[in-house]
Length: 325
Image 1 (cartoon, rainbow, N blue to C red):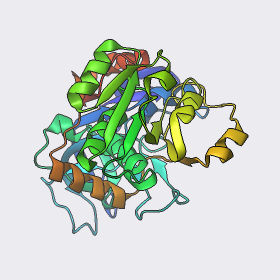
Image 2 (cartoon, rainbow, N blue to C red):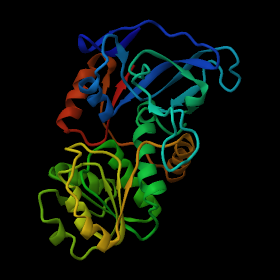
Image 3 (cartoon, rainbow, N blue to C red):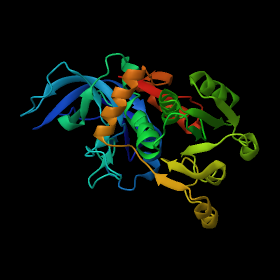
């Protein structure tokens, strides 16, 4: 079967063995798959190459075959893949054994994938195939950061540096659905305009003086994923007693922190990452209730997947990049 592979020959379109369903497993014929920043970083971080792996965490497809003992799914069912492996119940931190799909396990950038039945959810019927491939990882990550960890509520002001990523486009929509005020930043005038069109109340230039721009705002919650380039600026804008939730670092991830200022302001810094199956199901119910759809920037066939990787590397996209299979 065709797949986007990483191995000793680098990142490429190649051939992999067709998977077979074992006990408690199903084979899913992939229709679409979503690209995430994690997929971009894996090739550079792998230190145990020696073999080919299929990248990809997000996707949607149709069950082609079921293994022994499978009674909850049948051939022909349309499914959404849960990329959060072995994390089922909501908890403050991920359990032992948790890991994202798509390394070391083979992922979704292939014609077929074999998975445990525990990692499947019904495909949301109101979403297209392309939208279905874009919702799980980014939507779950954003939902946990904003709702579970950030505890955002109606009337809060949420500040999000770095508009443009798939996760941030979800957070903007989630926060507005909750009834919060949303402020984002971007260096790109085009991305700031897109964010406003998506529902953000304000969009300011990342290069601006944030303290001056936000002097009349009370920031209750900051959602950070940029890293060293913005972290301390974000913290300086946060109100006393406010929360700063970190779910990633696209720039350098080691920072200098003024602890005296932190404890004087009694602010909370909270780590967050993808999330549990329970939160995925909450998120899917939430988006259907509020008719929230993923923002898709580009759809390309699997054979042109490296074009999508280049877009993500250059950060030119606003929203998700999707592969059709």
